[in-house]
Length: 554
Image (cartoon, rainbow, N blue to C red; front, side, top):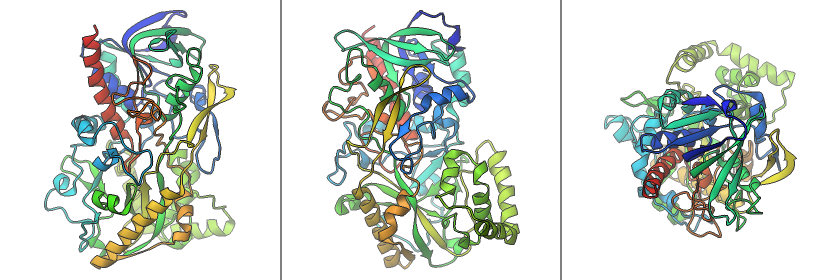
């Protein structure tokens, strides 16, 4: 059942076995997994099924440096489906090494292993509509699949790993019908959780305070509460709930909001590959079930340990889009149209380059001088992206010269001073806004540099090509756009030590017996992968745990 929270009478006290705060990928996946288990589930979603300006404004806050991190109301959507309403659909699991305690990554180590999460990844893949849980090129594409780069074979740098792409699936739209007809799930739209109220001893959640923008206020008294509001909002809600716990719920050791991570990403260097353009698989391939996939460079786990590297991947990419010297009509067209593209994707089409009449003319010349490719691209984009149910994931240009840049996507080491805090200014519901102070370290940049060195070494050793990049500008290349997009990770991290973590291996807040966190907030480290697939898998694992736990205590 899906209803408007404004239909709830003010002053009401609702009951449920499980109350989930947040209707994004984590919250919806968890609700679906709990349905049919003999439990009553209440899902509170702040937004509605379409964008709502006043609701989105509840995300507003401060950032310490906008060059490093976008304002907190960007890259997030406060509506049913959460940020899956705008995501690109890239799916891949974390690697087994990501769960290990690694000397080269400070504060690393999960209290669970890859094998503990593995049983839940296939269902996560299915919910994300990314096809089979198969991320090896030969297994997914078949033994007849061509290599990423013909003639390149290395035990150090692997190219058989895949990224799979969702439709991209908007979880709010895709699973609305299942939630609507489920007799044991009730979704309240426009329901903003404004506080987590604990019992006097601080060991259990007594109730959740809920408010609507229309002025309704009521509470929920669940047997178990799950915060699935995203990496930023979950920390905000915990920190703002200070009536019983003065420092915030779960924050006895000042960990909530700390260790905030995104990913380190940017286009780097020039890669020239030998051989024919047809010998390079730089774009998207399609699996037998019709899912788009893409390969990438990745350093083998044994070599990461040997060389002391954080995890990272590199994709073949086109040249820097803002520089008209690429002489490509499609790239110039995208640059000229960047003002018409959403913030989430338009930001990386503009690196601060000031549009002058001369620059405009050079880009316009590229468009006019390249009519065939430009027209073909537009036709492809309309048919395979705009009108298609399973959309072509991104811009891929025809490979004419075997010249590429590398698009790096790397792990950043968690650090305690990269954090989310509260400010005095409040939103329309009276909640304090948050302040984002995202920080990276020189070690993050150095690790990417040494990863690039290994890739360059193996390309040259095999005779496949040559990679050149400038080490002295690497930090500028990687930090040109700051923190990567909407990957909000680690603010309520999982661990076995209460002094350095917020939740345990079952995602339960250490100090509160019936309070749990779902989503990327619990990741102790970011790994190389986009977080969506893993946070869905963790939500499914949490769903199984809650079903068993509540059955035993009923």
